[in-house]
Image (cartoon, rainbow, N blue to C red; front, side, top):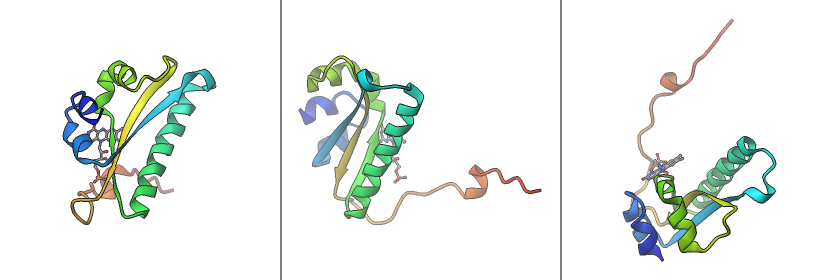
Length: 113
Ligand SMILES: Cc1cc2nc3c(=O)[nH]c(=O)nc-3n(C[C@H](O)[C@H](O)[C@H](O)COP(=O)(O)O)c2cc1C
């Protein structure tokens, strides 16, 4: 299964090497407001990544694989009304620290009276 999923994205190496991959879906049959539900799922995924981090694990959010959503759904045999949102790969970090970040001044617009 892992190899079949890995073939569906340019990020396949991450799926092959991570001990755990969690596929996240939106159940559209209980969705009441698509935008808000999408935001909630994004927050849910972020919480999963933060929880993994707190446990000393590393997590990667994979979205590129969404180009093959229908194939993922076929592979995992999920109901048609579940929309594939992301794959979250969890494993042991290969290294400490974090990747570089753009400085805050570049991404925050400060408006002062
Ligand atoms: C919505 C979304 C989709 C992403 N899709 C991918 C992906 O398909 N492949 C990938 O290597 N990284 C993807 N990333 C980036 C990684 O999850 C991660 O954010 C990136 O490796 C940088 O991590 P770091 O800066 O916390 O170290 C995605 C991130 C987001 C927010």
